[in-house]
Length: 416
Image 1 (tube, one colour):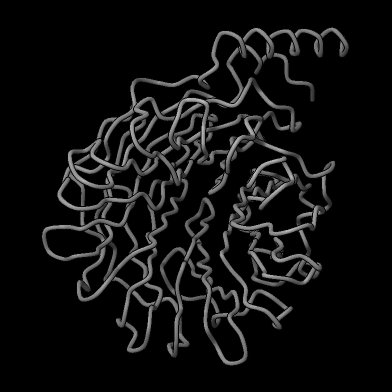
Image 2 (spheres, one colour):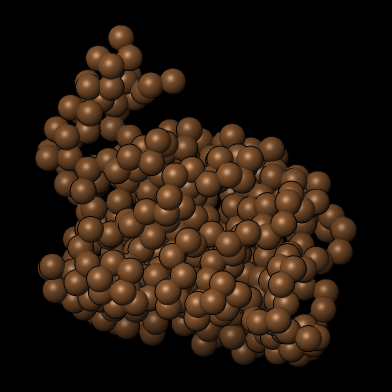
């Protein structure tokens, strides 16, 4: 029976690839921002298990030059209420927002704010319940406030406990820091440094958590493996205790490996993706990945994600469903002209599902820096920034919903 099931699954992968080269889009692409004066640039998206999602972005709003805004959606992609202003402190700049949602649909937004902590940039957050109502006031995440603390990202477990990580200019070097929180918003212990190697600066970074609250942090380091840039990671238990030492993700070490993203499935298996500059895919930049078991052991070798290799392919993000099927998105020069956002779907085995596909349907100008969120059934949404003039102004925020990563017909042929 097993060989027959494998052959059936393989045949269905091939047939679905031919029939659905665009990754199973649901409806047309849609504009997220309603305020269109000035620039609106995508920053983050998160989905709850039922498929409801929230998008956050940096925008030039009515009240301020640079602020953080959001828009909630139901599982059918209908906006829930108007776009909303996240930050209450409106002096200077509030940018680089990220969002995470728990199993009940409660969500937390984090961002960097200039001068609010009395120094350079600091990291701030705001909690929301599932109805979109703010829970308490915005709060400062970083406790060390001298110099730059910014570029935050966030992961949350189903119960609502969350961890925020960011890059901080603290005595001796620029490092990666974290702060854990209970679902009530109470800090769990002090902020902590994540990287153990401190000779070089560390960042950019990303974090993801499994259903038990165990989490993985990945970041970029300028050197440390003999190259001009490498991707490293550190695993943590839900208690906040490190699990093993920090580890290098990339095995190819020529030139720079940068901009990592990580996603974790329900069982704790995870995948890391990044950009390799230049040469690994034969061009100026390519997208690569590495899968890991929940034990932290690599599964197979690192792999190339993009099949189109002319020009640079970069700014990658990854989302995963509970069973481990995943989708990678990135921006790149394309055969359609200009810069577009592309995606590639994968089964939990690491096998590609169909060819890479273009996410955006509007192709004038540049469409890029996409972020992806996946719900419990594998449905996913990608949001990106479009420039210029698609929303009648400068940058605008757009999105596209997709059906399940693994086509419905293949769900019946999973090999356990």
